[in-house]
Image (tube, rainbow, N blue to C red):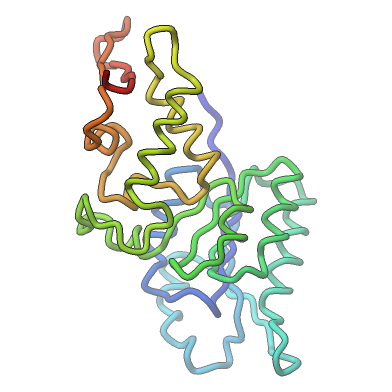
Length: 239
C-alpha cells in the first residue's frame, strides 16, 4: 500500500481569499494528510476579519506578522522561515504553498532539492516561475468552478488545447511500443513533469481518459487485467 504523504499547508493570506479554503483542503486530501495548517498575515488589518470563522472551522493556525517596514512583505519572510523550520524537523513528506506570489519560487525549489513533494496553489495570475518550481500546481479558480467548467473552455489555461495535443503527440512518439501504444498512466506522469500546472479540470474534464478521447487524432484502447474490476487504458496516434 502506498504511503500517505504528510503535508504542511502554508497559506499566504495577503494573496488568497477565504472563499478558496474548502477547495484547498479538499485538493490536499487527494495527495495526503494536512499535518500543519498555518496561515500568515497581519491579523490587525480589518480586511482579514472574514477569515475568523474559516480558521475555526478548519483548525488553521493564524500566524501574526506585522508589516514592520513599508514596501517589505514580512508575511512572505515569516512563511519561508516556518517552512524551513518544518523541513528541518523531518516531520513532513511535502508542502502545499498557497499563494499567487513569485516570492516563493526559491522556497519551492529549495524544498524540492531536499526531496520533498511541493504542491502549489494560486490564482491564474501566478507567475510561471513559481508554477514551474512546484512539482504540481493547481489553479484555485479551476478548483472552485470544477463542476461548471465547459469541456471546450480554454480561457486563461496556460497551454491551449491544441498545444496540449502537440505535447501529448510528442510523448506518444517518444515512448510508444513497437505498435505505437503508450500506457495512459505513463502519459499522465510525463505531462505532470513537463507541465506542473497540468490538470484535466483546466480543460473541463474530470480525468485524463475522457480528455484524450476528446481529441480526434488519438485512439484509446482498454485492456483487461487479472482483476476484473480494473482495466488499463492505452493510447496511440490514429493511422
